[in-house]
Structure formats: structure tokens, C-alpha cells
Image (cartoon, rainbow, N blue to C red; front, side, top):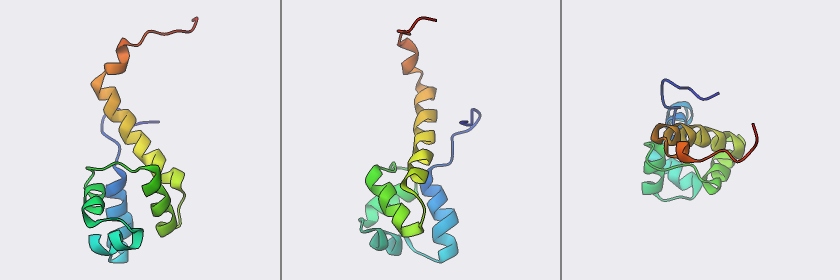
Length: 97
């Protein structure tokens, strides 16, 4: 269930707080280990870039998790954000009630 009163925690914050800090890793170390650029790592860790399937696979391998773990976190953030826009409310139901 998605939180309604606050935005779900972005995966970048989880990475930063639960993985990088305890392991003593810098953004540069993180970027190098994942094979991504430092700007990409910085944007991800600061919540300005979403976790893509490619990134999820890299994170899964680096931290011995599943790619689905990271994609689910990103999906929660994405769904919360789109609900705040209300754009989908214009869609008409196509099935019988």
C-alpha cells in the first residue's frame, strides 16, 4: 500500500543511507562499482533520476538484492507523483460495473 500523506522514500535515499554510509562508500566509488558516470550516480542518489531496469540490475548485483526490489521502490514514487497530478482522473471507465 502506498503512503497517502507523504511521498514514498526515493530509492536514491535508501541507497545513500542504508548502503553507502554503512559501507563507507563515496559517490565516486559507487559510480565506478556500478559502471555509471558520476553525474548519473549523483542524480540518482539525490532523487533527481529514476531507477531504470538497467540501473536496477546494476544495483541488484552490487548489493546482492533483486532488481524487482529497486523497481518496486521506484514504482511507488512514480505512482505517488502521478496521483498528485490527477491527470488520470479524466480517463473514463471502459468496463461494466
